[in-house]
Length: 132
Image 1 (cartoon, rainbow, N blue to C red):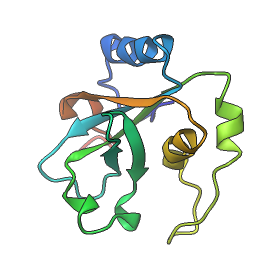
Image 2: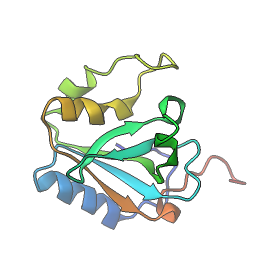
Image 3: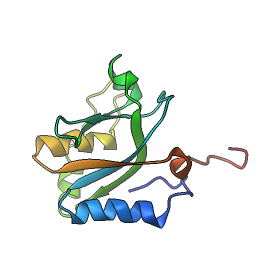
Image 4: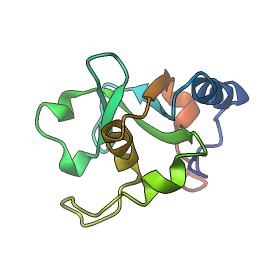
């Protein structure tokens, strides 16, 4: 799953996500490191180094807002689990919206293997119009 406004994603990045799934992960998220994480979902690491959750800006605590590894908006899934996990997403957040990013914590709650990889910001920059 990826956003349509990120034209600089490379075949190598997609291959890296694919490799993570083929290596036994059920969910793999693409992220990047930034000195200014405002507006991005924060990647919350587990104690074992995997991905515990993605916390959206509007839901983040003060300490979570200090995290500089953020969601780039691209995920890979084991095809056998995606439908079941998506059906568990609810709107229990301050925006009363469905956050696809909740699939990470739902996956962890269901004992799935969830991980992430980091790339450079230049590859995941979004393009919104001709001047942006």
